[in-house]
Image (cartoon, rainbow, N blue to C red; front, side):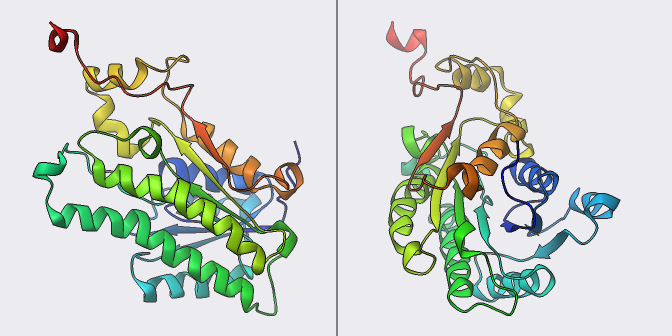
Length: 273
């Protein structure tokens, strides 16, 4: 299906692995121009860049998005090679692997998670809006402007032992999304803002946790489809929502990509004896 993404410049944050990598590859397959962001290692992005069919269509940009100067540099480099960004996909984030109940959580962990999962999206989206407001000689197509925020089921149901992560995702996919969809139209009258909230996904970030049978059982016990999502499952929803052609009247929505998950399994049988 033609999503109308050909030659649309999309910036994907956290693009070097998992969901971000799948989004990058899918957008390239649909003919988009992609600025693929990473923070530490580009990993498979270099291989994508070497493919003949995507020569000149993939720009790899580096930066710590929790730092204002780095964010400005990411947009400067993205715009210099492929023009102004039309679609922003805020995918980067961290999920601290070790459980830490609120009573035991270090302030440092709380601050780090919110810096990466919430402050960085604020800085990145702010820079995106500013470049729309002050276009270059190669401007964005304002009729196709979209922001996609990657949330989580933790933002809907909470997640014991990960209150930092749950709060950051809830803020992003609800308060941030619903506020921004009303503000973006002041700059891009057809601009849209939506969120995609996955449950467990087969990514490097979740790999260790999924090796634990108890964690995997709890992840699937309330999920009718009884399977873990693939990065491609999430990427497809991102592409659909990014498309002004098929989702041009969809904004302010949070699409749950979680196999029908009903919530959390809180107690074991022995806990109820």
